Image (cartoon, rainbow, N blue to C red; front, side, top):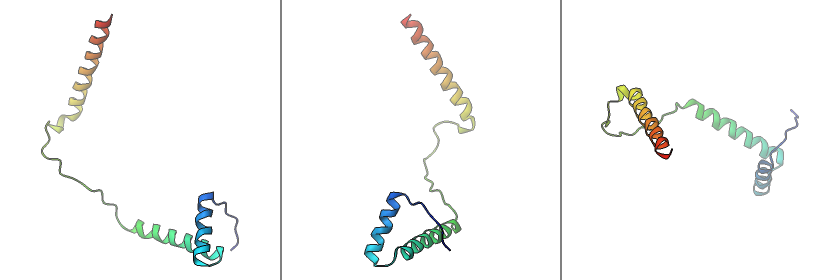
Length: 89
């Protein structure tokens, strides 16, 4: 199949370098690179993603009321700002 593809300059440079190193035609190097990239992507897609986890120890606050705690902290900060503004006036 023939098609026109616009390559980014860095990709073209990598392909040209591979052509020089391997001594293979540009078309062959390009097809191998695309094939390798698509095969690797497919292989990775088959593996489930696993997020690493770490034990952070016992919580210092009751996390069942985390939103209430965040709201209380935000209220305290707003009050502190208001007091600082009044002190400047």
